[in-house]
Length: 82
Image (cartoon, rainbow, N blue to C red; front, top):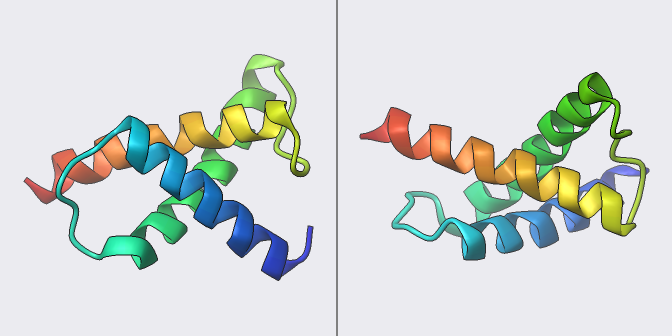
């Protein structure tokens, strides 16, 4: 995927993850996009490691893996910031 697609994918995933894991996080949408992109990477890595596949585009499996990774990162981010 190109950089622009990753940024849009990160925005979508970050918004979904923020909806699932609400809270007052510093940084707003910029941090949500970054966490969404990093969540896609983490979710893809964990999915590949566990044999579920990787994040390879705009499909349901990729979105689920990316959102799972982003929610995990939001949880860790909140714990580190406290």
